[in-house]
Image 1 (cartoon, helix red, strand yellow):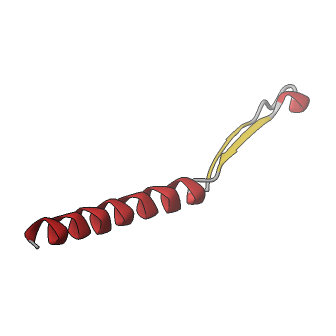
Image 2 (cartoon, one colour):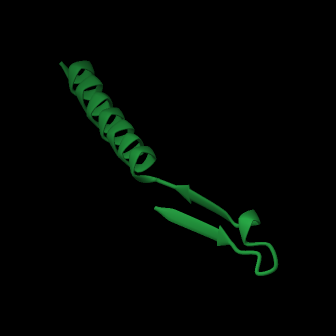
Amino acid sequence: MIKYRKQNALEPEKDAEISVNLVPLLSFVVGFLITQVLLSTVLESVDRI
């Protein structure tokens, strides 16, 4: 989780906060890479037969 907070001391109602959750993106990337490795391994073993 990445959080960014911008505070305005003179006008507190203009405070801004942005938060980004990177866990879903990271889990997708890891799953995608694992799938690619497994598929390439299976295709290589099929080609050898």
